[in-house]
Amino acid sequence: MPRSAWIIGNTDGIGRALTRRLLSRGWGVTGISRSESKLTDTGYEHHVTDVTATGYPALLARLIERGLPELVVYCAGIGEELNLEDMHLEPRTFEVNLLGMVRTAAAVIPPMVARGSGHFIGLSSLADVLALPDATAYCASKAGFSNYLAGLARATRKTGVAVTCVRFGFVDTKMAKGTVRPLMLPVERAVDHLEGCIRRRPARHTAPRLMIPLVQLTRFATWLGIGG
Ligand SMILES: NC(=O)c1ccc[n+]([C@@H]2O[C@H](COP(=O)([O-])OP(=O)(O)OC[C@H]3O[C@@H](n4cnc5c(N)ncnc54)[C@H](OP(=O)(O)O)[C@@H]3O)[C@@H](O)[C@H]2O)c1
Image 1 (cartoon, helix red, strand yellow):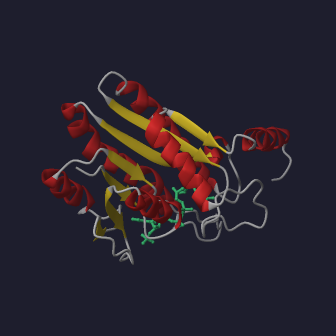
Image 2 (cartoon, helix red, strand yellow):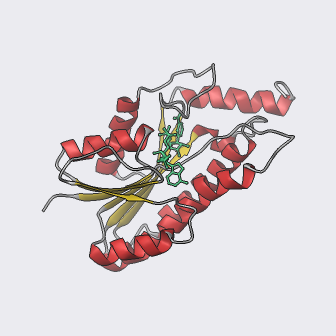
């Protein structure tokens, strides 16, 4: 039997690269995104849905009835700049980045626990400890994301189910749109890190680790009131 994975948010970026990698390793993959997928691999099945749609949990329930995968990776995410004149996109960032992940976990973790096996990976960010003035909702949604997965990893520790929070710095996708992107990882390198997490199942993985002092410096600058 091929190993099976669901990848949520996979028509672009890290999710798409991970889907391709797992397919090349012989996994069966089910993807979920708002757009159609161009992947035509026989081991691949795609569902067009928005993780904020009311029908999303029902879709997950139908898929679970057909077969619960070993691995679920939540990659869906958006990052919009704060616009103080029009803040209507702020709640949406939380709905996609945080609540979509919680809805996914709420659907798949209980049957994984009942089965006694499974792995849930969520893509967070090193921004989860920052309060950047131009990325307020992104930072706060990732703070909640990482905190939630840290608790969930502890809660599932003795159940056979692993929960992993992956905290990337910059990865070379359309999401990394700023002009300053230190230590940016090529997307294939980010997927190498995810493959390592699939093998080792850590509760938390941060990459690249050299970004940690840079993030700490940014926090210190915020504390001093430098940079807005
Ligand atoms: N790139 C970076 O520098 C970086 C750094 C740290 C963490 N991350 C995190 O890594 C994850 C993936 O980022 P990425 O760089 O690969 O971003 P990306 O290239 O923009 O891809 C995002 C994916 O999420 C899907 N998506 C977005 N909104 C969705 C929704 N409402 N429902 C379903 N799918 C949705 C998109 O597909 P559709 O448009 O078809 O829906 C797309 O496949 C994100 O959570 C991001 O925060 C990225």
